[in-house]
Each structure stands twice: as structure tokens, then as C-alpha cells.
Amino acid sequence: MKLIQVAQRATDLDRAAAFYSDLLGTEPAARFDPPGLLFFDLDGVRLLLDAGAASALLYIEVVDIHGAVERLRAAGTTIVGEPHVIFSHADGTLGPAGTDERQAFIVDSEGNTIGLVEQRPA
Image (cartoon, rainbow, N blue to C red):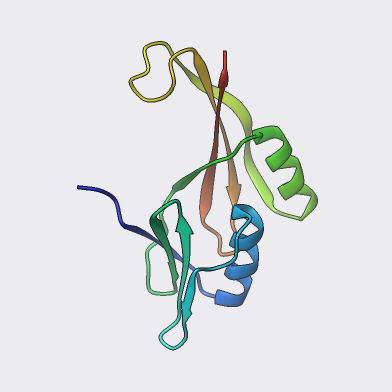
């Protein structure tokens, strides 16, 4: 099995499209309005933004967590958790061995919490 799609609540598709385009660095893959569906391609997994979806906690990988948080803060995004080390990957079970996993948390344009994740050599 493989994950095909995750859904996230979005009540304003235009606002969500602008926010996620900036966050992900890519434009939406598809939009169907009506009924009000917006899709992004996340390396083969579809992110569906839909007013009828429940809020989910998504974790998105970033290359430079501190730079991403500062860029988002400057754009007016609410930061609810500053970058910090969550744990170290000693054996490679959940990430590359010898790296620290850093996470930060933001609030998207629709009120959903998003986790940002960076894995960096310890």
C-alpha cells in the first residue's frame, strides 16, 4: 500500500491556494470549483483542500526550518511552535541515522496547524 491523498479543511480556496503555493513553492495541480476542491502534488501524494474536510495535522519537510519560519513570519503567518529538536535519529528507524529532527508549527490561512520538519546532521 501507499498513501495517495490527504485532505485538509479549507473554507476559502483562493486564500488557501495563495498560502499553500507560497509554502510549498508550487502552484496547485488541479482545481474543481464547484464543488470546491483544490489539489497540490506533494511528491506523488495529493493534498486535497476542501471545505468539507476535517482539519488534519500535516507535517511538511523543509530544507531550512529557521529560514522557512522567518520567511513565513515576515509574511504574517502565525508561528505556534518555534524550531526545536524533537529527537535524534540514532539508528535510521524513522529518519537518516545521525540526524536531528527539528520541528516547528505554524497556522495556515484556514486555521489548521501545520508542522514543518527538517532533518539535519547532529
